[in-house]
Amino acid sequence: MNLQKLKVYFLLFRITFSVSAFTFGGGYIAIPMMRKYFVNNLELISEQDLMDMAAIAQSTPGAIAVNIAVLVGYRIAGLTGAIISCVGTILPPIVIISLVSLFYQAFRDNRIISVILKGMEAGVAATIVDLVIDMGQTILREKNFLLTLMPPLVFIANFVFDIHVLVIIPTCAVLCVIQTYIKSRRGGTFD
Picture (tube, one colour):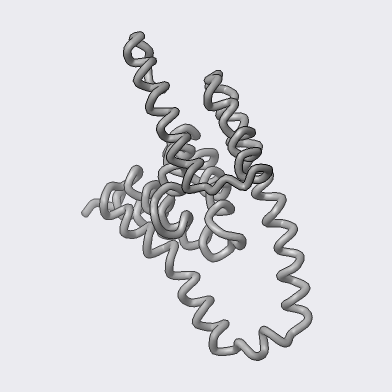
């Protein structure tokens, strides 16, 4: 194994470990952090690749943060990169949950920890809003009428009309397959 590969493996482990250890609020928070490191700072993957991986990570079973870390690791360094990224992502929660379970009574009754967690909720909400805006801008840049209309219509269908996501997601998938089929018949490209 050459030194360059070892550097990439260590980099993957270090970044996925730190993203997992220092992000709170779920997998949606991991996506902007991965973008910061892998897209903006290191330029190892493109913004579009990350958005595609985020879509796949959301639609597959399991934790989004782990799914996207595995996809990014695989994209950068193959199967070994996927395994290293997975270990780097799941290790911090295992350690943190083990420690919290040991001192559960002390954490539950501590007012300072309760206040810290409330403050973190506000930060997580702001980060999720930032992610939604970024993903919306990516969709608008594609200038695809169906994809542009889909987010607000899905929001209205779910929030206003209380249509279950198990109906919405397959419907959106079928609409996109139909659109892709129509484009392919017309000789369009698949960006």
